[in-house]
Image (cartoon, rainbow, N blue to C red):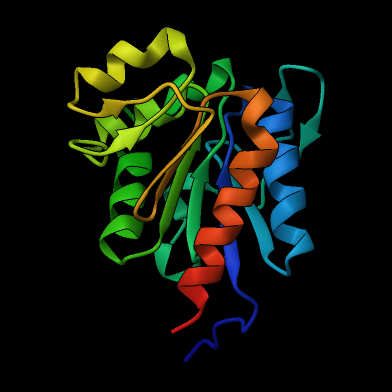
Length: 179
C-alpha cells in the first residue's frame, strides 16, 4: 500500500502555452509561504511558456492527476487556458474535487472551465470581463469583483487580482484544514 505524503498539496493547472505568469506565480508564492506544497499539471510534460515569458516544467499530466492527493485544484488563466474549457479530464477533476468538499479555484478566463463543468450554476463568480457571458450562459451569478468566494469555489478576475486570489485560496484552505 502506498503511503500518501503528510504535506498538504495544491494542484495548479496551467496551459502548455500562454498561461498568465502572475496568475501562476503569485498564488503559488502565497500558498508556499503558508506551507502548502504546490504541484503543477498540464496536458504536456514539456516546459510550459507563459504569456510574459515565464517557463514552468509541469510535474504531471492533467489526466493523471488524482483529486484524492490534493486539498485544492486551481486553474490558472491566460489566453492558453481556453484549452481546458471543454476538456473532459479538467471537468472531471474539478467535479471530483468539488464533490469531495475541497477547494476549487480559477482565475481570468479559466472560470469558464468551471462553468462548463457545471460548478458555477447558481454561484457568485467572477472572471476576465470579456468572457462573462460564457459564465452567465451557464447560470453563474457574475459579479465583476476582483475575487469572488462562494463556499469552496474561488474565482478571480485577472492578473491584477492574482495576489488577492492567492490570499483567498490560502484562507479557504486554512479553514478546510481545521476541523
